Image (cartoon, rainbow, N blue to C red; front, side, top):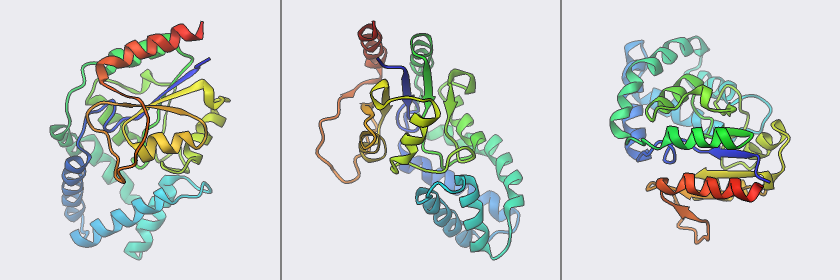
Length: 239
């Protein structure tokens, strides 16, 4: 029986070309950093180095702590107090990144259907962003915190995709078995293969499938318009 439906965000519920998004996001964030005294090139290098460390996080501390520890080391001083400034950025100028995202009028309907028919609906987005930035990206497709049982962010996570411990932790947190979970995602490595390592089945969704290593696979790939129909089939098979 399927008890939990997991959804990735970027490229799945939120249709997005991640390269365009990252370019605009970094440009906007670096401009803000320069306004409070950061050197642009140094800031960008710090950002990428700290993000890489979150990917490598071994579960001892949160991704948030890993990020700011690494970022401060790169700056040769404690800059964790700047979290407040950057969180303000996510509340305001970060919203400009919506210009490189597409609408998904089906997102709310899909989540509502999942909420009404399954025990848990979890936003399993890679937890590299603070909660505020994740909530803002969710708002681009008219979904919010109340739509989900749980949302992974850098504050509450100590692993990142494609580390299978990311999904293992979710299973443990909700006392779920792998065959009680279905993941909808768009990344062959970070979603499908990663989840498969702990026994979770993945459905690839939409037009922004990422397969950076051109891996041959047999994962089911459906259009966004097919998601509710598939969820209905899953619900009926639960009976």
